[in-house]
Structures are given as C-alpha cells and as structure tokens.
Image 1: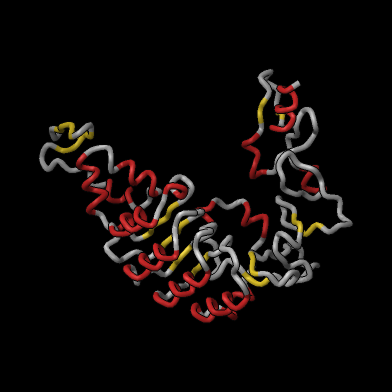
Image 2: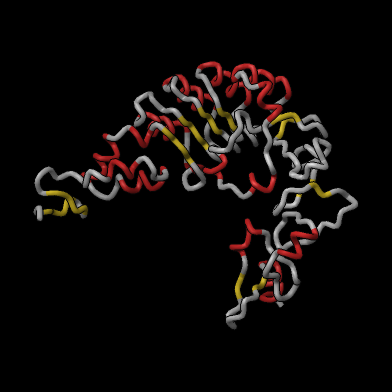
Length: 297
C-alpha cells in the first residue's frame, strides 16, 4: 500500500501529493456550491478544482448562491472557464445587471444555452444583445420584466425558433414538479410564449386533456390548473382547497393522502415536505396553518 500523508487535512498520495485520479470524474457533476466548498478543503483539492476546466464549462448558479452573486463575482467564476463556457444558468440572481451579462457573453462565445429565470435586474434588450453575440439553442427568460411580443419575435428570429416554438408543449404539472436545475434541461428553445388569452409574454402551458385541444392553452394567470394532473379548472369546476396555495381537481384531491388531522386538507406532492407530523406516532399530520392557530390559542 502506498504511503499517504495529510495535506491541509486532505489525505493524498506521498508520491505525487495529488488527490485520487477519480476526483477528475466527480468534479464535473458537482453543483457550484459544492465545487467551491471542495476547493477550500485542502491545497490538493483546490488545485484539482482550479486546474480542471471541465466543471466550469457549465456555469449554473442556483438558490444556494444566487442572492450573493454580483457582476464581479460572476466574472471571477466565469474566468475559470477560460472563455469556453457552454451553458450559463443564473437562477433568480437578482444582482446581475445587463453589463455583467454582456461581459460574460462577450468573453465566452461558445455559450449555446442561456437560462436567466427570475433575474429581475436584467432587461430584455440586454438579453437580445447577448443572443446576437452567441448562437443559442436554448433560452429561459421567465420572470424577466417588461418582455413584449416584439422582444419575443426578435429572440425567435435570432434562434431560428419561430416555427418550433409554436409546436412545443409545456405541461403545467410536469414543469412545476421540476427543480430549478431540472428546468434548464427541459425540452424547449424559449420558455416563454404569447398567451392566447391575455396576449402577454409569459410561460404558456398546455392541457393534457386531448378533448380540450388548444382551447385552454394559456398562462397560469389566465388558466387555473390542477397541480397534480395539469388539467384546466374552469369556474364551473369544483376547485378543492389545499394546505398550500396550489389548486387541485376533485379527482386528485380524493386520491391525495394523507390529509391534515384538523382541517382535512392535503398538501400537493410538491409541498408534502411541509407536513408537521404528530408526535403520537400516527400516520396523520398537521398543516402549517393549523399548527400556527393551535400554538397561538
């Protein structure tokens, strides 16, 4: 067995003082937060993260870092990709400005996927300019304010996506169950479209019921949908109450178990982790609202 030695708390080979070669296969799959944390463990892992370009070809900043990310920090992270970043995903990064985005795009011409949902400090004009500088095949801009139909048509022309965008389908219940990281891999070129109900540029969802056709195609503000099966819920349908703020059809409500021991309402599958279980060992739970009312009385 090779002798080994601790390097700053990290077990490395005495021969070359480098981490095991398997580390190189792991780094590319680590989320950004864990990648940065690994670089703080010891000198050897720091060098491994610094010298391996593969993890930096896909720069994804999610909620664990999004509220701290500024233009300068983004530039520092992007520099590790040495101008070869292919995927740029900034999820709810409120401090990223137009200048920061354009600087990244200008220095990384290989970007083919750009996902910017909830980056409210960005303007659509800057996103269009960024799309002119690279060749995009996937773009997410839901939550970007003041995006209009002219903006969308320009982006579609830049991506040559006009025809395909009309044929793509996004089902509400499937999309809502995806994590932010899974959403950037969803099968669409542009995640927004023109809502046929309000004519605003928003995320537009289709109904899984074949009988509806395109009659109930629309954004979530115009069409209420069941969070579990995605069917459209009209004013004449009975919309069941849940412990969370989502809507559910009667059929799914009956199937959804368990229900709150006090108000007899279920959580949807997405928010089932908010259940407060009884200490008695029973299978029931108490919802957050009932727990609050119970503890305050």
